[in-house]
Image (cartoon, rainbow, N blue to C red):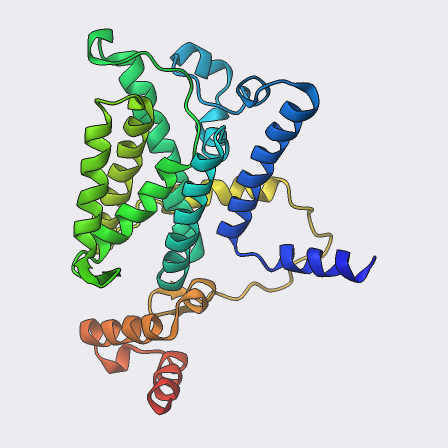
Length: 291
């Protein structure tokens, strides 16, 4: 293996999970572009097995499209905009929340967008809808992450050029633009956007109450992923009970930034008192206090 190949392989290996999702989106777009250039077949015909059809019975034949449409783009600007927004919003998410939880929000947003799209074009009378084709794009998942952040910490300030605005203002603007878009040429896309936004808002409001609505979905995805993992021939002699840190398992806890870890432990103290802390939690708080 050459040095260049090794460096490339190492960079791919060190991508975070959202960067890998972005890479898959770019790869699928590139495959469609390559076929179009070499064979003269437009992407709309080569990637049809990935797009979400508007007809419910067509969807029944291609059930995987409830996810795969979120990795498919036909226009370069559509892809570029979604990937730029996903890059910045995912950086915020993985710094403040466990990666698995962020993934749950993203994929549930894609599913919610698909369900909203299918519902509108198969339940509502045709007089209420415009004629649309199939659905493609990661916008529903991206919207779910954006609205989740805006709803989870609505009064946090963010900088927009030289102006400070609250996150809830951004969330409100996104929703308003999508509602206006229902009367434009991309009605189907905006329906999916609103489905993703609704999921993000509901997820945030429930999490603030202490309920993670994506936990079951995460376990389902884990069980599916485990089917493709090679089984170990080693027998487990002893399985120790997983210790938790401030209500999270150690894997999740280590993904938080320093301030988030401290806040979680302080929150536990406010609810249950200092004596409720484990030795590890007390040690972590002591080290953080000295930094």
